[in-house]
Length: 73
Image (cartoon, rainbow, N blue to C red; front, side):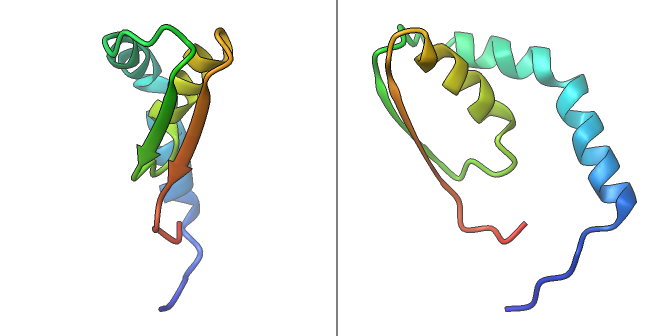
């Protein structure tokens, strides 16, 4: 396995994309109907863009979130 640092442009576009799509991700997570007390496994959480919104919902009711991802970036 070989790891190389991402370019500055890739980092910038990834961060910018997270801000631009944040509202869409939030609406997507709201559609799950989480009440806040669930135990959630986020398998393949990647950059964590959706995960942040799930965590926000679970923080309201004492839920638990476990994230798993095998990517190196």
